[in-house]
Length: 257
Ligand SMILES: Cc1cc2nc3c(=O)[nH]c(=O)nc-3n(C[C@H](O)[C@H](O)[C@H](O)COP(=O)(O)OP(=O)(O)OC[C@H]3O[C@@H](n4cnc5c(N)ncnc54)[C@H](O)[C@@H]3O)c2cc1C
Image (tube, rainbow, N blue to C red; front, side):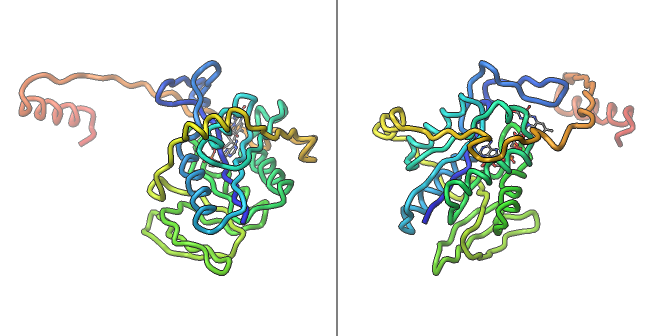
């Protein structure tokens, strides 16, 4: 069984917050980390290999040269190999182009039995990439997986956490799934893992290597950024009762009540 974990490098949003026109989080020169949701994807991929006799786990990322660090973290956690899609033509890729490149790389890797993604990226946050990869590869998509029950006779059984409740479903491999935090606790990289990861060779593919060249970087565009909202803050003073009375007065004055 071959398991692929989709891993994105993102800005460390705990350490920065810079937007331009309300549209983009810039991270040049700022700390970058493995997208926290993808740590769960890596953990699930490793557990699938350990529990079900998997052949190997591959971490796959698309990103600028520095994204290789996210792959080294995945290698330190225990993945067997890492592939980096890196091409300046992808610097302005939208989700569909990102998914096309990821799907092409998965094809070039010979496919996978399970492709695991995080629920979303903490910067882009579309939550669309895994769904698009599944669509492009014509595979079942198991989204928002909260619990993994196991694999038997090449059928995977999971519980998905949806807005309307939980549902337990099964699907025949190969599948794509996105996982939630409660599915597992990501392991820490070991000292040996970190040393091994530092020396590991990471495969890098360009668009030409994926036979996707030329490609339109973005078929979608942002028509208008959300308008910046003006806000004012007023600190109410006094006892709790006085502040509550003042708050109700303000809400009446603002016609909010
Ligand atoms: C019109 C448009 C223009 C854009 N221009 C730029 C730009 O100039 N520069 C820029 O940096 N971004 C740009 N983006 C954002 C970029 O396309 C997204 O960051 C990317 O497609 C992933 O989407 P997401 O961040 O919403 O991830 P989500 O869909 O929320 O991610 C879900 C999961 O998919 C997997 N995944 C997502 N992205 C990757 C990846 N790159 N590699 C491996 N796995 C992944 C992870 O497992 C992740 O948890 C643009 C987007 C649009 C729509």
